[in-house]
Image 1 (cartoon, rainbow, N blue to C red):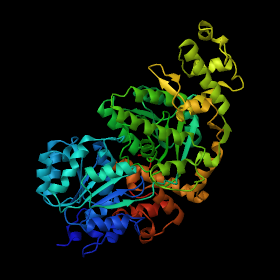
Image 2 (tube, rainbow, N blue to C red):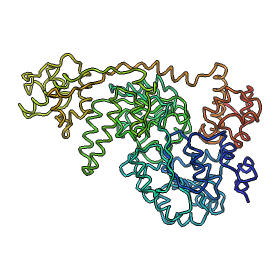
Image 3 (cartoon, rainbow, N blue to C red):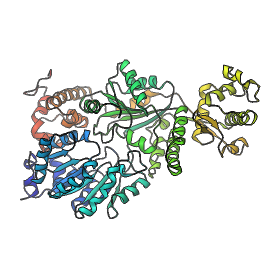
Image 4 (tube, rainbow, N blue to C red):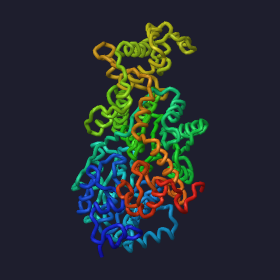
Length: 627
């Protein structure tokens, strides 16, 4: 029996009677005319039985790299997915195009698990999703050995890195798959990996003989924007109202307390926001995640516990109100915006207290010296991204070893910051630190030092008679906010250091070169951000003619009703890009739908007539819009 003849649940009817090729599957099942980038080479490597390590940005089409081979090769593709809460939606999306997919996880009762296991052993599944914790157990491996395995796909493979931001211990055991199933191809995939993490994935998963595919890390549809932090919750509300009103978005914060307070503030401002962190009951987290995936316009305020593996394609913005701990984390989190390729924004508010807090967390870390040094290196790279006066995207991509030209679509390209000589202000501030230490054996935080420099009398300056210091009032020419920028940039350049529990400031080994005049200190002047230019850019990228826009909204309304009736997220029915193409092309027959990307045979058979009816201005049969 041919592979095509063995596929049921709709796919049998859409694939040819002979053994399907990768292109047959791509077109008939998923509705795409051709592969993108290195997808075809990766797919052919796996189909031929070879291993692969794939580094490809979010939205680049990683899933097809193992889904297509799973449909071509004999047996079931076993997919390691780190978040069981997302497996249902991943399986729903595959079943919607006629693929026999299922999952095994702790959310199922015994009867459900038994049904899936029987289907696997009978060869009736094309893809089976499991968590790394389940696959690491001996009983699961013995069970899988009783069926036919087409391939192993290890998604979010960066979780194997012990120094990474998403380390999962159970990923370490996945290297054993090579010994147990030496003839089964394995593919490890991630959207986030430096050269060091890439090497770690290869070594720990025993993929030394694998072919390596490294796609561009660039996400040109994402506009990167970093603003000086000043009343961050108010700034966040202004940003969402101007550029994310009614859109799906994610807001990241470092602490659970900040998550709760930020979500409450957004709610008080009329924004449909929900908190998400590990301290909430699992049922609450699951409900929040489900609402985010299935409803439009939900904003989730979360710690980094939320987001890995999120497949929602129409997240229009990702915002950070605390400084991420690493560039890898920042890239991974911002990459959850704009998976559909449509214009999106990555917005970050960053200030002096972020630097002080992060430095203190590193100093107080229970890890050894090597661990603290690695954390410091991660932070230094993140600070360099925040403080750069060059293209943000160029800086970001260079971190992953990829050269690039200025993008023209980040804040430093759209509104280039001015650079000024901050050497003298730096000398004034460092000199104040020196005098306090030498003359009075005292150390203070940024706020008190700025008061001294600006000659601002306070109870504390009076208590310590700091009005008598030689540097009293010598910095009156700068505002308090400007001085805070000076301190922040000196910390970022490691010309100042934070000390102790209270974050007092002290000198570093490099401070002397500034005090002596041997080293200049250029600094950036934060310009007023003009959101109108970037917003216009975003709107123009997806602009539709008035008639087309009206039809697009009608198609979205139809999709919302169908999704509600079927109990799945709207994007599983069709993505915005596909509906936009329908609105533009206005197909008048079911056959004409075959020319539109994203409409495979199964969806054409299921929804084709309803799409034609909406285009023609008719309400599809059996559809109630006020449902």
